[in-house]
Amino acid sequence: MQLGMIGLGKMGANMSERLVRGGHDVVGYDLSAESVARVVAIGARGATSLENLVGQLTAPRAIWLMVPHGAPVDSTIGALRPLLDPGDVIIDGGNSLYKETLRRYAECSAAGHHFVDVGTSGGVWGLAEGYSMMVGGDPEVVSTLRPLLATLAPAPDEGWGHVGPAGSGHFVKMIHNGIEYGVMQAYAEGFAILAAKEEFGLDLAGVGRVWQHGSVIRSWLLDLTVAALEDNPTMAGIAPHVPDSGEGRWTVAESIDLNVAAPVITHSLLARIGSRDDAGFSHRLLSAMRNQFGGHSIKREE
Image (cartoon, rainbow, N blue to C red; front, side, top):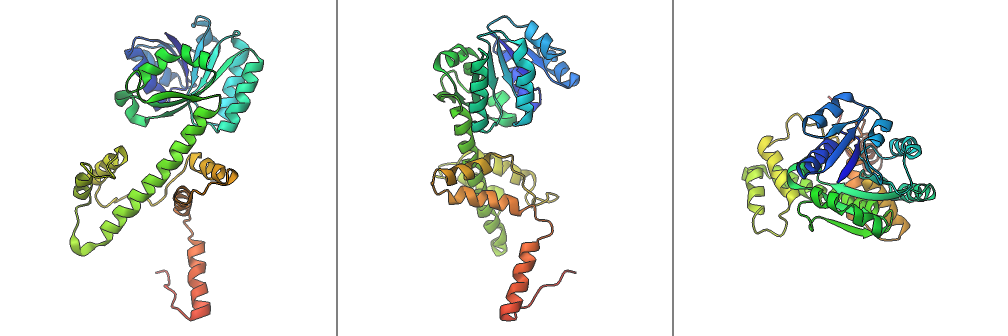
């Protein structure tokens, strides 16, 4: 099956390679000519422009976007739509906010184009292990994409599913990432407590290896945590600054809108935000408050 892939960063390039290995005809385009050259080297066809990409595909076309959420998605679709024929399919495989996906679906439908949202998980491991994909869109359109999805997934009928109408794929992926925030925070806090018990001299990676087998908390995230601890047991040289890419914030906002309590996910998001407060103003102020009401000592900076 043919596919146009727009956005050849690490994940887009790896997805293209997995599709090529699966026998699909992939045409790749990116603003970076170097990125295009990399996918051509693994067997894809390269495009020099959106016009060139569309021209190399036979209608009805399927074009997969792997570009950053927000304005880049809108600008790419805006440039792409005048080049397409009725019945062509645009697939957004990035982490877009589902509310924006609903708008894009309506706009594309009005122009005679199909729009499918695919929340995609797998990161740098997807090439070898396959991608978990949460698909939203019209059933008859999603069914035409089955050969592509079956190739990208860990197995043809595992790790992906048509979860509902347009927007639902990105909504489910948003909640998936919110859960990921909470699980990661729990592992981080637990291992921090283990590390603080210095008199036991615990081998943190060794403890993690025990938990990897038979334990109720074993998981792929635990496997990755153990690998990180084996590589750098004390986390030396890593700044305590944890970014967030948006999905955790969207999940917390949605929980508030739906009146569903999500304290673990909310705390994990706040912990990430707190990690970036280099000035530490709130903690400094808390110390000053304790001094004011109780005469407690203040630790001075050296």
